[in-house]
Amino acid sequence: MNGKPDAGAAAGGRTEKRRGRRIVLWRHGQTSWNLERRFQGTTDIELTETGVAQARRAARLLAALAPDAVVASDLKRAAATAAELASLTGVDVSYDAALRETYAGVWQGLTHDEIVARHGDQYAAWKRGEPVRRGGGELETEVADRAAPVVLHHADKLPDDGTLVVVSHGGTIRTTIGRLLGLEAHHWESLGGLSNCCWSVLGEGARGWRLLEHNAGTLPEPVLGDDT
Image (cartoon, rainbow, N blue to C red):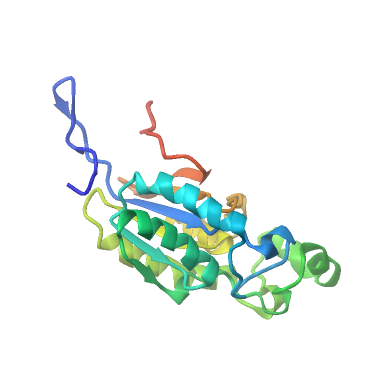
């Protein structure tokens, strides 16, 4: 049974439609560079003690979803976050370098203020939604090109009502959501950032993936109303 609620539960004698597959995109816990507002990118920074505690709390909530699969970035901060969920659920974690954060070249290791001071024009162009190789690194579309197929590959292996948890990084999650929703790249910035150890939920709809929750820190609730 895998601990999942009966998708065919009856309401008033009628069988409810199965909810379809679900993807939970979970950002890693806090790091010291997060506190310093320092751009991490692909730099391999570990969780703080607070970050570990965040991961443990979030894992207790996400374990209630009885995930069928967990895939994570191989960077330490994501891998350690995923390990907390694996220890509760017994689901093995698959690691994939394609889920790493955006490589940002010379921006990596700089604080937000340093980036604005040294690369202000480039920063402003990025915020306007222009295709920018921040610090000489990756375009956002290139991040989506490597990350989104990995997420879809694992989602395709789910049962019809299965749940995949993807443990990754804020920028990578945002670009992946944008790609899976079919949004044009210059609109991806309209998706707000994720707090440490918060997550977004995509659900399978009749016309593709839908954003059900964003930057959530509690368990997803069903949508009750006309727009289900």
